[in-house]
Amino acid sequence: MRQIYSLLLLVFFITSCINQKEDKDNTNLYGPDDIVRCLLQDKTGNIWVGTWEGIFRYDGQSFTNVTPKDSPNEKRTMCILEDTKGNIWFGARGSGTWCYNGTSFTYFSEKDGLNNNMVNSITEDKAGNLWFGTDSGICRYDGKSFTKFTMNEINFAAKEGKSDNRILSILEDKAGNFWFATWDNGVWRYDGKSFVNFTTKDGLVNNGIRNILEDKSGKIWFVGGGVSRYDGKSFTNFTTKDGLRVDDISSVFEDKAGNIWLGDNNGGVSRYNGKTFTNFKLIETPSIYSIFCITEDKTGNLWFGTSRGIWSYDGKLFVNYTEKGLKQ
Image 1 (cartoon, helix red, strand yellow):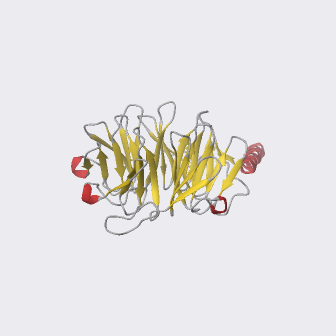
Image 2: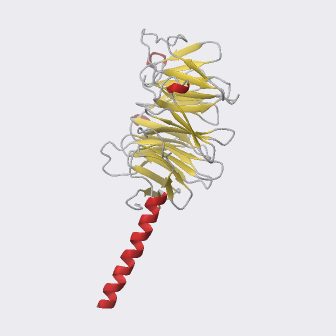
Image 3: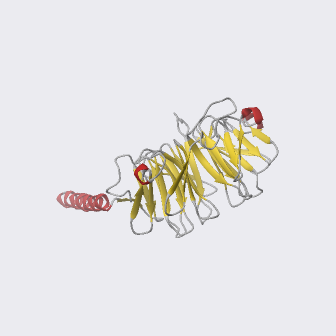
């Protein structure tokens, strides 16, 4: 009995030491059990996770919290982008944007020319400029300085006479047009000379658009309170009547096989193969369980960022990675 008791104490001691080391190194076998708004796999294979707790990096074995120690108190990360130079950019709610060059972080805020510290989206154009969608409109960075655009300055006033400065998603399509999704003013298309506004009056499913995607065929997808697909001339809208799981859609992604994945705010996803929808439910009791982002790794696994951590899907099984352990 004493031997068993001594063995248990030894196991407890070793486990405690391991846990202390993990805490010290900010490394854990499991991912954050918190809101995950953005996911990205970089060129080296690491998966970057933007959460309400800061920035995590997954190397295939463990998660490391890499949030800079000198970062502002506001760590809610909204978006991630890897630019053509290999730098990783992070946009946050209330603390501007961070650039990671593989060694250190550089911080940019309103003091450096950013138009607002509420950064919701980042994209890189074909010329290498970075575009930031913020709560105060659009900001473009050429590597040296920021150029600010507000809705009023670029005639972004809505047809109804309203002006919505909050940009949630930015896309540069194959033709070189820029698309900007707003909180409640539909979407805007910019061809380099003029802006055109699309709302529900033009066939858009909802005026509050959360995400934009251009698929392999060049069609543009808009999600937020439903799903719209734009072919350059008109919108096709999808609802539950067409087989979509629910109409409250929060994210959109196209996998390597050309399937469109739609994450919803009720704990599930829908896969569209061009003809029919296949619906999946990640959790039985959603309780405001949102699928905020979707990405695919180099091995073909899908990753889902949710309001309660991270899930992966290998084509057969959904697995939940949280700090409380793996769940299937």
